[in-house]
Length: 418
Image (cartoon, rainbow, N blue to C red; front, side, top):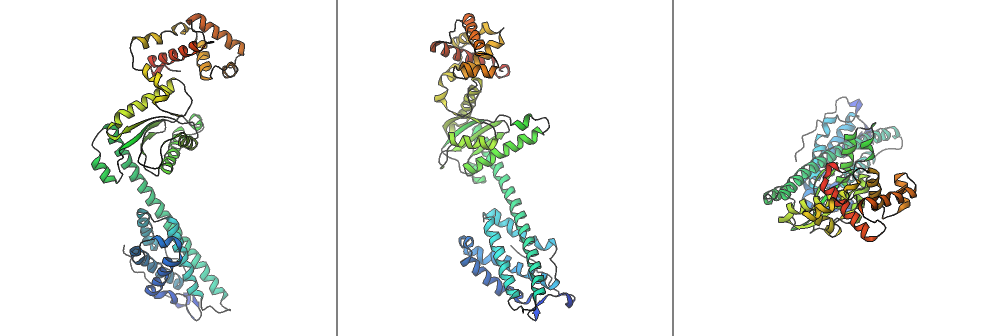
C-alpha cells in the first residue's frame, strides 16, 4: 500500500488556525513520531486492535495513520476540509482491510481514537482566551472524522459486497459441479471452499410471499427481496458454508456434514421467518460422489409432499416411504389411482375429501374451510362412500382414500393438480 504526498503549502497566513501561539498543525507535523506513538497506543489500549498482526500494525496501520495526520495538518492550515480526492488512500486501505477480514468496528474505533488524540495534541497549549480557536478546531476535527468515517464505511461495504458476490459465484459454480457429478477438485482449490465428505442434500420450496400477489407491488422486486432474506439467513446459520442454487421459488441446498450446524426443524423455522412464508424442505443425506442421485431423490420427495398437500416442514424418506413406493409405478399403482375415478364429475366431493384428510378427519374444521355446514360434510362423505365403496368412517377407508388420492395426483402429474 502506498500513499501520495500531500500538498501542505499554507497560502495566506491569515487563514492558518493558531492555538497556543503557534499554528494548530505544528503538533501533528512530525508525522513519523506522532504516528508511531498512536500505533503503540492502538496496539496496547484499543482492545480490538490487539488482535491484529504486528506486521500489519507496523506497516499498513502506521502508514495510513501518518497519512491522516498529514491530512489533519493540511486541514488546520487551510481551515477547510480537504476535497474528496484526498480520501482515496483512506478508501483503499479500508477496502484492503475488508478483504483481509479486519472487522469494520476495529477500523472505525482506531480512526476515532486517532482523531481524539490528534485533537488533544492540537489543543494542549490552548489558553483560556482561545475559546473561539478551540471551537474552530473542534468543528474542523469533527468534519474530518465524519469524512473519514463515511469514506471508510462506504469503501468497506462496497468491498464486502464484492467479496460476497465472488463467494456466491464460486459457491454456485461448485454446487453446480457437485450436482452434475463433474470434477470439482480444481474448483474447490480455486474458490477456497472445502468439499465435505458427506452432505445434507436439500430440496427447498419457498411459496409466494403475499407481496408477490399484490397488484400494487412489483412482484419481481418482492420475490427478489424474499430470496435475499433467505440467502442472508442461510449465510448466518451455516456461516457461509452451505452451497445453494436458489430462485425465489426454491431450489437445492448442499449442507456439509463436517460443520457444527445441520438443517433441522428449528433451522427451517428460521428460514421461514426470514422468507415470511412457511418453507418446505425434503432432505437426503449423501456421500459427495452420490450428490446428483440424492438431489433427484430429494426433489422427488418434495414433489410428494406438495402432491399430498402436506403441511410445511422438514421431510425425509422415513416420512414418505409409502408415497415414494407408489411413485415406482406398476399395475398396482395404476389400479389404486382409478379408485376415485367415480368422483371425476363431482369436484365438490374431491374438495371435501382433500380437506377432510388434510384436517385429520375433523368435520368442524373441514366445514369451516369449505364454508359449508358440518351436516353437508357428512352428506358428502356418505356420497363418496356410495360412489367409491371407501368408508371414511373406518381407519382402513381413511388409509385407502389417502393412498388413492396420492396415487391419482401422481398419475395426473403436476400440471393437473389443483
